[in-house]
Amino acid sequence: MEIRPYQSKDKEDVHFVCLNSDGPCKSSKRGINFALAVYCDYYIEIEPENCFVATDENDKAVGYIICTENFDKFKEIYIKDYYTRIKKWEYRRRKSALRAIASQEKYKEEYPAHLHIDILPQYQHMGLGRKLMDELCDNLRKKDVSGVMFTVWHKNYNAINFYEKYGFRLIETKETTLVYCLKLK
Image 1 (cartoon, rainbow, N blue to C red):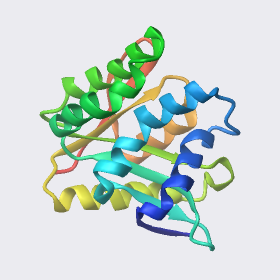
Image 2 (image 1 turned 90 degrees about the vertical axis):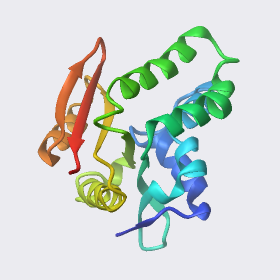
Image 3 (image 1 turned 60 degrees about the vertical axis):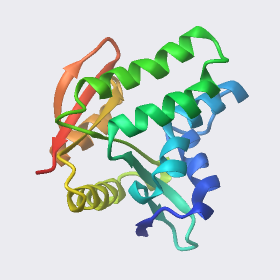
């Protein structure tokens, strides 16, 4: 296994990981488009320099960590170019997409970066999450980013355990979402 910067050739694999990191994707076409618009495409299309992949022996991405280093830049582009893909869909999905932004905006001064990390099930518990997190945090520190945060579903116990072991701290509990942060300097 290798950790390396994201490359445009990884897009299809990253999409597959995004949709299948909790097991085989069972989403509708609309659900797939929503997941990719909210949790994936902005990062790999606009800030690929803040994206890293874990690859197998065939250089196929089996996991990734993707990030924006500046919330204000993210919000401006996301609302203009990515949210428009979602707003055509039902109200519940649009509301969900904006809730994620609200959590990030609330803490943007101290934690301007936010991340998403996913690994295919058969590659989890192999140390790839820690290696991906180390690569991203080193990258953000070099750019003098003060902190990083993310939201996680409150019942994703394996992920929560991983984040807490890594050093993230819980800063907010919402209805079904937890907000975690890590100072980088």
